[in-house]
Length: 403
Ligand code: AMP
Image (cartoon, rainbow, N blue to C red; front, side, top):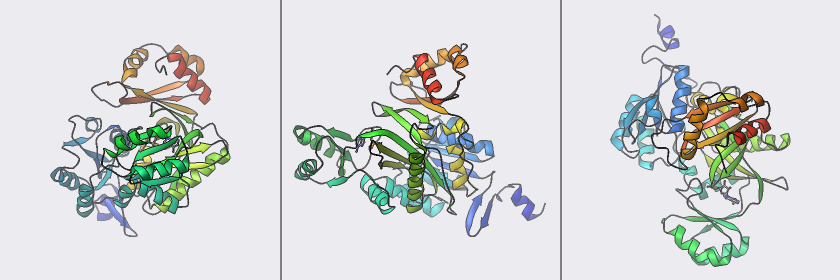
């Protein structure tokens, strides 16, 4: 076999080809993932279908991704294990943004990390993230850096109540934040959040009409594609539903996608960037936060779009042309938390008359986590239907999600 043919068939060690200095990783290559949770699992499932191999680093034996890929069982900040991941992989990605800075630097030096460490550095910290979003010409909720209780008092006086105090790092699913509803709460809010020993930021409260998100992908060559915006509904600060198409005007949808493109370009993203937005009654869009990875609000793409967010991420980091993101069906994604697993499994065993009547096709995804703890994300269901009302009705009729 000629050398060229060997390359094109993905022969051992020949799956990396260089075009214009940018490596393109063809199927047959191994993708290393820092993190072995559900995002890694779904990435590995999508990439394996294309012929890629996967190895995930995660401290939990038999982690969600470890069940569908090879796994190195070690702590995320274990340098030796990260080195092993680098040795076994042709390209490295991550499924969470709180990657240890030392590990990120080491992987950059010893392996190929097309997403780089800059984007992680930016999105790990709310203040840096807001500054980068503003530098890209996109609006965020007005904010102030808070370094003292007096400073917080002054900022609350400026914004009025309610307003939201957040830790600059480490917060997720509403953790690390405090909605200050009256000036009496300032002392307690400051004391509680400053205990974490990290910087704080106060945000003006945005009276949003809807929460939206747009996922964009950018390849190393600068090709960008966005997925249709999702309308997101949270319960207890945890994502409950993503409704697509979002129930907003098409002009707003286009505008939200335009902002995501601006951010992907401005921040030099490679791979996916999830952009969470607030949409207000007077028609304004504000970015709330970013995630440089596949996102829960993009799970709907798995069956509803021509290309899923996971395939798109693999395509982007491997420098393949990006896939078409067209929506093929209205869809509502509903998260399956620990308390929903039992009733859902019971329902799956029988004939689903509601689905038949409504013309809905509920697609169940479970992540293989052992313990169904209340509020823990265990899976999701993508309910495809003739329209989003029918999908929402199916969710309601199952009575699994009593909120
Ligand atoms: P976050 O952790 O920043 O995504 O915030 C979690 C949730 O809190 C958001 O999805 C919103 O529902 C709410 N929230 C956060 N920041 C603000 C804000 N500045 N104004 C209004 N609601 C907010």
